[in-house]
Image (cartoon, rainbow over all chains, first blue to last red; front, side):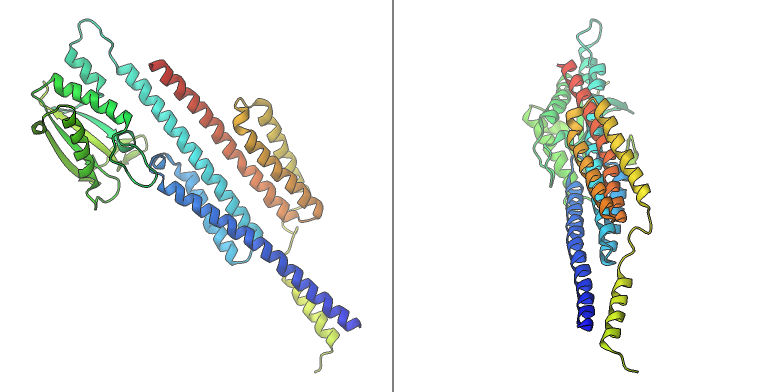
Length: 253
Length: 117
């Protein structure tokens, strides 16, 4: 009887420990899967992508790796902790990205408002339309840059070729310049961040040109080019490859 | 050498017990209790001063859930688990801060848009 009781106690001990491990393992696995799904969603979000703070995003990535490693070592409580921490960090990274985007948009609005010249006496009409179009002088040309997410209607998975309302507003101002100076010509250059295997940069430039032509600009005045990811541009984070369209106007004195 | 059943059982129990994870050895209950109290204080401070009260109410409630869970785990004697539970609650504060900043940025953006119109 005594022996039987001792054996039974041993078996119960094994069973309870095994059971508690099984419960924690499921929780840990579920939270890692949730974190990895969130990571995937953030990676595929083209609109917020450039604004994601990499320090917090990187920490979240490391937490997921730790979590997976601890899961394999059967340290389920610690694995769960790192999984939960990574989810909180990913949510935070997304919120910070939205904050940066909002601040950037505010900056653009304030900059546009500052450079918008109301009808003042003495200022030539040509100068006014150039200023309103946000064109800056680069050598003999006037240049402006429009980011993809401002020019085209955003989509989570891939870039659409539909010009957004903000894009139309920017391009209409360019069109006013082209109509004000009928002798000038325009080059539209498409740029991408990634290797341009599908000629995306060329297609973006062509779509932009189509909009100008639809609004009455002669096709002979427009040339298009796809640069791919061969040119970087200066941003607030340094020189980077950025998805954008550059509009270069020449022939205005 | 012959082993009796009782000896075998004792050896088996000893092996199983030694394979169990060491709980409570790395952190003391007092340390974890201190963390819990400090976290609760922080939650109360945020509640008292936060302008964007509604925005962060859900997040503060989640932190309090973790505080409550940590307290229960501490009462049960699972100190390490209580530590991890309250640590998750503490990490939540970066989310709270980020949400407050987002609320401010969106409000400023709205004002800027209205000014232009």
